[in-house]
Length: 86
Image (cartoon, rainbow, N blue to C red):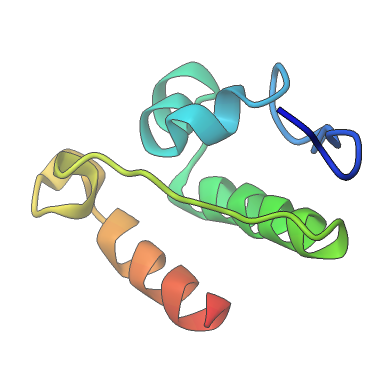
């Protein structure tokens, strides 16, 4: 694998890349972040990646963006995040 520039640590998570692997469940269960805190960190990560020419790819579980009452607010925040990112 050839990289045009060295990887940049986002310094936003408990260990490099753990937040981005499973952002919904990692943020909620491991980092114990609220919906607002989770998406604030995701926006910070997106901004950092834009500055360095990186690409953000999000992967969320169906249940976190569905109608499960334990995940209230996630669907709306994700929709707003995607709209803002365009």
